[in-house]
Amino acid sequence: MFKKFNFLFVTVLLLSCGKDIPTLKGIDSDKWKNDKNACRGERKTMEPALRTELSKLKGLSEMDIIKLLGRPDENELYKGNQKFYRYYITAAPACTSKDSASLKLILRFNAMGNAQLVSVE
Image 1 (tube, rainbow, N blue to C red):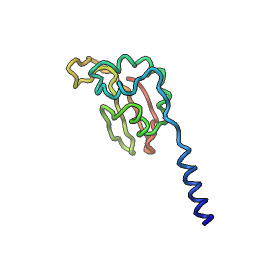
Image 2: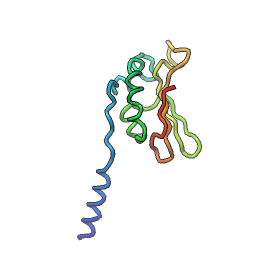
Image 3: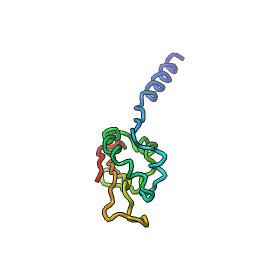
Image 4: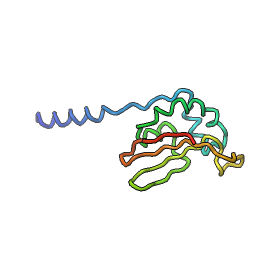
């Protein structure tokens, strides 16, 4: 009985030690998620705030990123189980009012599923 309690206690303790999802100042998560491919132009207004908050995204898991920013506009599976997520900040080529050079938030996830590289290009 005591061993079962110890096992349960340790399991609950380990599961509760997760990292909290950060708050991104100046970024309205709902507006970001609803502006798929940045066609509405709402993400562009959040670009300055995003650039100052980039460091908070590094090290987050894929699921945490999806909770914050929604599903990516584009994703790519790369060698070594690395993944790339791309979120358009300015209108994507798929939009009717597309920009000549679209600005994107790019996240590279390592094989463990954590954001290793975060950049705006």
